[in-house]
Image (cartoon, rainbow, N blue to C red; front, side, top):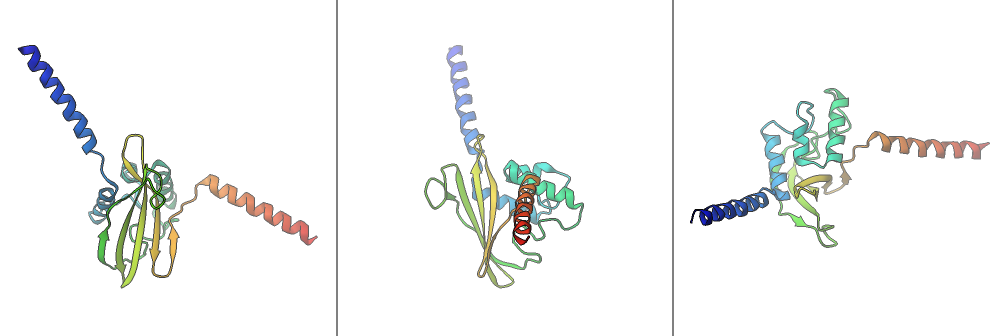
Length: 186
């Protein structure tokens, strides 16, 4: 009888730990909600150099590396990210704020099965705005932001922070074009 009780207890524990592991996967729209809540509480991952884990919580390693590098290299001054990344504005005056449901991947609209999109809409100083957070699901099944797209009623742009390799490639291409132009002028 004791053996049956021990086996039953072991099975219950095993199945409950599997279930709790699955329930810890936070859906992308809740990741975005938590990101805005952290920002509002004064513990935003942006523009700080004290806690790298804040970035790792929300962003893929490559995007977190670029944001961290910008914060460290700017030394408290304005860096490459010269606006509030959560609103795409320098002095946000936000109304009608809404986090939309997650758009899941697996089709042509939202990308591969391990990708998702969460859109945030609001008015900033009366102007309609939308931000799209692009997510990728990691091997550990966590959802992380890998790109951010900003749109308003007149413009669209993407948050891009170049790393040193990208800058070097761009400079080499520019220098090659300049060399060709110089040769052509002679």
